[in-house]
Image (cartoon, rainbow, N blue to C red):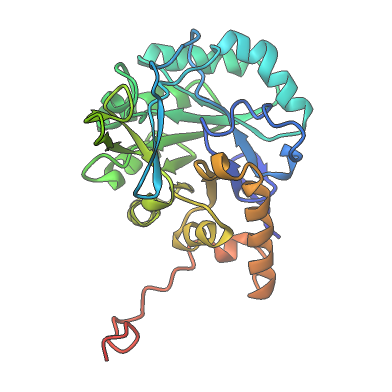
Length: 314
């Protein structure tokens, strides 16, 4: 009932873990079977290992969210392919490798290294991390650069290819159109918003890099609006990301037009949340008579006119 296919990947359900929030998919082996999920999106993988940014790298905010500035810390592609990937595949997970880089050549190198390994379902390309000095937002806010990266990677793989977009641009739809034109199978929408918080006792920023990526339930309405904008701009599938804490949150992204969703910050609160959301989506579909997930995706009804009575203004 919740299965769907994009390119040559069959997802058991629309729920994926977001990159950087679920490690390499191996860190919580006794919690649940990762094969139950639609897929696991790995930490961002770069050509060489990265230590990431100096601490403090994570801070909870009083506005209901989380700031992070991890800086894409990871083991590098060689260790990932030799040690992490085999263990993850052994658990039956649908594996989407998230790739980060500081140049077009590095993106291509990492993808080509992965191409020689069986079992990888596809790739999510991080062109939008706000927490690295090189790459990151410098790519994600440059539409020709995003188009070039998409084009070069498409030439190198027949596997599923999704481009992860930043919300920190004027028109995210323009970037989605560029990805679609260059052959992307999907766009992930959205990466974290650029944010900042301050400790008034010390009058210092809460994280060492001053600004970082803001995530959590507070960004859900903004992320939904970005997905809605992208849905109107392109026909390729969208992976909705941003503030999903419950099945109801995930359903909102599906209704507005996302084919898949990713859970991120909630996994720090409840590592079991992904399985709960899968069950909640299935229950909703049964209770509301949906026989296939594609009947639910994009079912947003925008014909309703604003009503002062419904809004409680009478």
